[in-house]
Length: 245
Image (tube, rainbow, N blue to C red; front, side, top):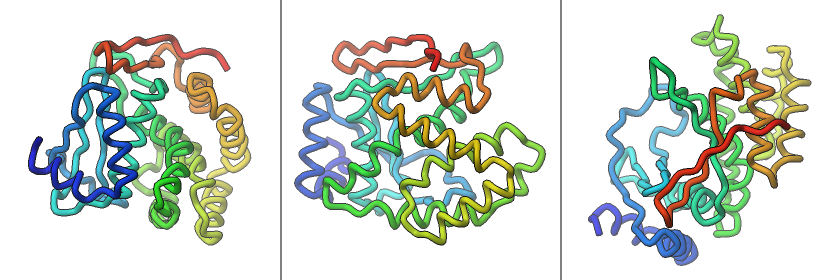
């Protein structure tokens, strides 16, 4: 066991540690913990937040600063792993192209937005209040509207608006909610974003159909991504076409 992994486990409350143990017992292997080698983006509203990479043959939690260990943050990443491995919930993956390994940035942003609808409320089951974090995060992101760096990039602006609106139910501050709503109305996307949010909530028990709904609303060709299932027990990844809604 690495020193950093021991340090993280020692910081976790009993119930969160039990969740980590459940995931590892199911997988038959440890979750790795490492310092994040990637530089933090200057626009990241949460530069110290952990992240997790989950695949069909392993998972690793990355910490931007090994001296900063937030138990709620670690819980959040563990809940991601539990969904993909223990619950068998699929994720969206891009198909590689001739010029790249695929649009991982886009599929990852879709994945996070959808998964957060489920796992953020679950954090309360472990004694945490996740909502101040999401109030602050969305206050930061939407205060930057109209996002001058994205002027002219219609696809990304529209994607960020529609996916960002899925956070509405994670925001409890009325002022932040109003900021989000006013920004969407200024962008001319409020009605479509609200229709998208309601449809995605209706489909919460069916992840493949949520992904189908996302690609339809975001105007992403269905043949550019797949629904992928990660079987950690057999170390295999199975993929299927994105269904029609």
